[in-house]
Structure formats: C-alpha cells, structure tokens
Length: 126
Image (cartoon, rainbow, N blue to C red):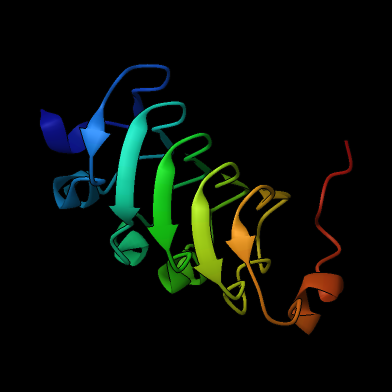
C-alpha cells in the first residue's frame, strides 16, 4: 500500500526536475531523503501534510526559492538538512521549534537570523 510508506530514500541518483507534489500524499513518511540529486526549482510548501516526518534531507541539489514555511508546522521534524542548494530569502520563523539538527549551510539566505533560533534548547551539537 503506497500510502503506508514510512521511509523514502532516493539519494545519490541523477533525478532531475522539481520535487514532485505527489510525495506529499504519503502521510506516514517519517524519512524523506532526496539528497545528492539534480533536483531544481522551488520546493512545494506542503510539508504540513507530512505530520509524521522526522527527517528531511534535501542536501546537494539545485533547489531554490524560499525554504518552505510549512516546515515550521511539522512538530515531529527533528533533523532538517537543506544545505548545498540555492535557497534564498530569510529563514522561516519557527523552523527551530522542534528540530534537533538544522543545516542551512551553503545557500543564498539573507536577512536577519530569527531570534527564535536562539531560543531552541533542543539542538544537538556535533
């Protein structure tokens, strides 16, 4: 049953195009790994549909636009790595509410660092 899929790992391939909106129908996903591909464009702002998501890995693509603000509404998200892309704009407010690991490095982010980033005692240090 496709809707019961809990982990989807498609990393280190040559997938191109945009992040498919169809991924957001897998409501039971706890892990979504699309890292190290050739994905480009904006990421759909529909993460609120993945209310069980614990790990999101989008590292090493050519994704751009804003980091989806809907990530702030995923209360189960503990590890979020969107580094090595072309995301621009500011860091979404509230994205640090529940995460323990947040990697936003090697993007084109700008603006002020949100103050709630420093209120998040849950970060794990590496």
